[in-house]
Length: 189
Image (tube, rainbow, N blue to C red; front, side, top):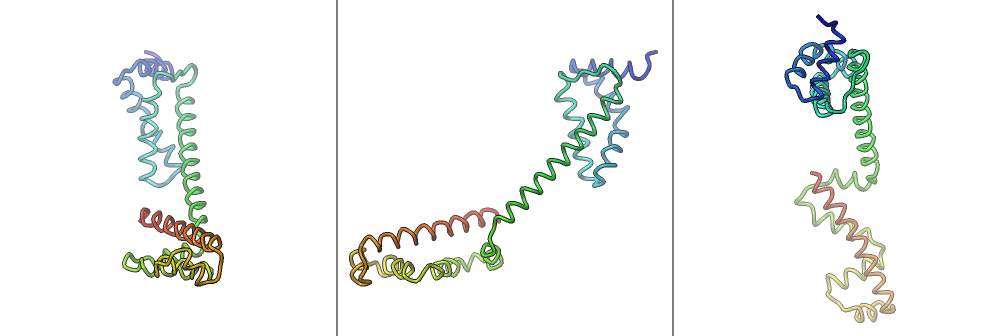
């Protein structure tokens, strides 16, 4: 009879050729020890279950490229450790990205989030219009609410037509940005 290490290395050779029976034997021999090793690092049972399943799935997916020449147990537990570390790094990256995403929202965005009620959308949009600088707001309201032409607004405010166009362009850009944020927020709900 072969010693366990030689037998395990031989079994991994069969696994690399696609032997499900050899894979099941390795799994039966080491699944408890692998599970316990993962549990020592993670502690959350649901997460441990996921990492455990993913580890053995990755062994199966990578079977054709796995070569074990010396100690099977050393290879196995080094692989488990690396798999757990990669998982923890991935979790940390996701948390960091989520934190950066949350920090990307301004105080006004958080205020907006608190006030969010689909029936209150007109009030939110009107509030954003009210936050426009006074002259810009007036030009926008005359154009959109009073349906005045640029020439009429220019004459009414005693400004050049180019100034009126610039004010409208700036107002529209600000409102589009607000509506874009609103759309993104509603999409995330």
